[in-house]
Image (cartoon, rainbow, N blue to C red; front, side, top):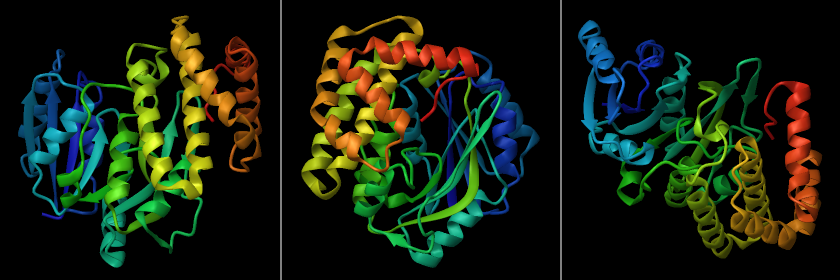
Length: 329
């Protein structure tokens, strides 16, 4: 088996057909689909079983379990994989027909442990193409890939725009529960283990931004864990990769500012966390302002938070009224 594609499902009955049909159209034919039903309370399981019956020519395994969150669902999926490579899909996304064939060809050409492709963020009224902003002929070390990830130049912190050699997962810990940055947590571990990382520019995955997704639905208690998790990871990375610690701190600052914006969306403020974010941003502000990879918008946002955090929320709300959309930097 060349590749195992893990699809974690939680109350995704309205998206399952589109997701699985896009896998069915793959030009790489040596694949299996591992669907993990993570305790759905809608009719997802019935829809999946019906799809399996109607598409008996496909190699599909359905694994049902109690709800434990996306990372644990993916872990369960990996445990049932028999492919040489593993890929992940979110149930509300779809993929281009050549996505996995292109990445497998790159993996075989370069003997890479991980291959990353481009992707497209599809919003209600616009789409944003995310391509690799580096030489795609280069084969990176894991450390180099981590640097580009934190510089937002390539690789990116998502699990679903990549394929991984299956043996990597013998050394990767999947966190429990759902929280912002859960993909980042797993991807960082994989890149630290990987000896070779390759990239291609082809747009493979279409990431659909749904209104009730965690990242767009405002602040909730999971952000508190996410903040602590980001701090722990950043401290470890800075110790190991001090040569690009500025990029690591800059990445974290942007993530933390997004958390404050999320609080403003539903007016649920964790003042202890805001104070810690302000302290972090003030500590690294001068470095952030000098970083050529950071946009003017993000630099202005950091300055506003360092003065008074509500300024950022005010500016964000003004921008949302004008554009009718969420700011995405």
